[in-house]
Image 1 (cartoon, helix red, strand yellow):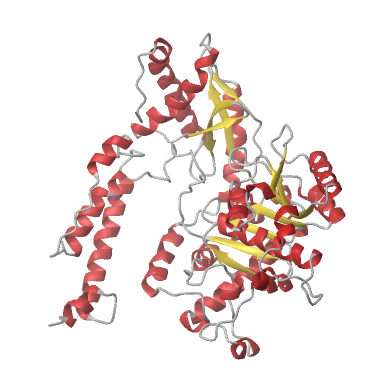
Image 2: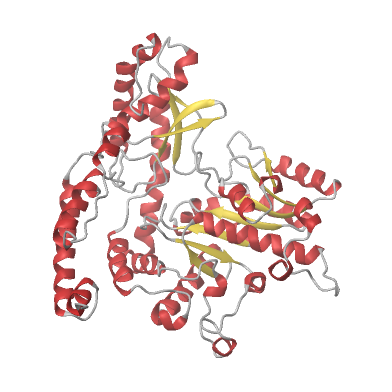
Length: 510
C-alpha cells in the first residue's frame, strides 16, 4: 500500500509536514554552516589518507530521517570542507561567495526551474535575456540577446570554438548542391578535419584542446604559439604561425585569446590579435573566464581594451565575481552565427512560439535542462550596486602588486613573474640549498600546509621551474594575511628541508 502522506512529506511541496521539515532542516543547515564559519581553521579534514578512511557510504532500507542524515552530512562533509573565504585559501580560482549568491541558491533550488523552455521558467527566461543584454553592453557588444548562461568557462569556450569551426567550414566548403556546408546536417568534411585549425597561446586554458578533441577534431587541430616575457601571447609569433599555416593550405577557423591565464593572470594583447585575425579572416574568441570580471572594475577596465572587437566571449562568474558554482556565460557578437547550432523541438521551442516572441534559450545553449544560475548575478548586482562590486574586484588586483613587492624584499623567496591581474607566482629558495632539490621542496611545502589545514597554496610550473602560486582574488584578504601565510611557508621550509636533503622525508600525500 502506497503511503502518499510519506511521499508528500519527502517532497518539497504544498504539504504541512513537508513545509515543516523544510523549514526545520534549512534552519538546522544554516546553523551548522554558521558554526562552521566561526571555526578559524582553514581546513580540518586532514591528509587524503585520513579523509579516505573517514568517509563511507552506508545506506539502509529504513533510512535515517532528515535530521539524522543532515547531522551526518555536517560531520562527514561540511566540517571536513575547505573554507574558500579563509585568507590563507589562495591556491586556485576558487572564490569566496557572496551572501546574495547563497540566498539566490535557495530560490533556485526550491523552484527547480529549467531554462530549456519558457513555460518551465517564465520569469527566469525573461530575466536571463535582460541580464545577457546588460553583459553585452558591459563588454561593448551593444544591446542584444545573443548569449546564454553556462555551467562555466569550459562550456563557454566549447561554444566559441564550435561556432567558429562551423562558420569556417560553411564559408570554405560547399555541399553537393553548391550551398554552404552544414556541419550540423552533414558532419565534418574529411579534408576539413585535417586542414581546419584553432590557435591559442601555450598558456591558454586546457579546455581549448579538450573541446577540440570532444568535437572530433583531435589535439592535432590546435596549434599553440609561444608567449612573451609577460606570459602573454606573442603576436609576432601568432602572425608568423598564421602565415605558415596558410602557406600549407591550412585554414585557421579561430584564434582563442586569453584574458586572465590560469597561472599568471596574463591578458593577451587583444587589439593586436584582432588586427591579425581580421587580416586572415579568422574568428576571434576571448576566454575571459577570469579577467572578464574587469568589465565591472572601477580602476582597471582599460586592461580589457579590445574585448569589444571579438566575435565571442567567455565569462565565468564563479571566479572573480564571487558567485557560487556553477555560473558562467557565453556572449556572441552576431546573433546570426547562432544558426550553426539552431534546433527546433516542438515540445520546447516551436516555430509558432518564436514567431510570437517567446524566448528561445535552448537553441542558444549546448545544454537542454539548465539551472537558472543567472539569478545569482542579477541579485548580487542589484543588491551591491556596480561601484561596490567593482571595488571588491579591484582589491585583488591591488593586493597582488603589494604582495609581489613584499616577496621581492623577503629573503628566502623569489618572484618568478611580474604579476598582471590577481595571481602571484613565486618559490622558496633557502640560501645554500641544493638547486636540484628546490622543486621537491616547493611541492611539499604546499602539501604539508594543506594537510595540517594551515594554508592552501597552488603548485604549478613556470617554464621548467616548480612554482608556488597565490591567487589573490579574495576581497577580504589583506597584505598582513599574506605576510602571515608566507611566514608559515618559510617556517615549513625550515622544518622539512633537511629531511628532504638527507632522504628521510615522507610526503604527506604518500
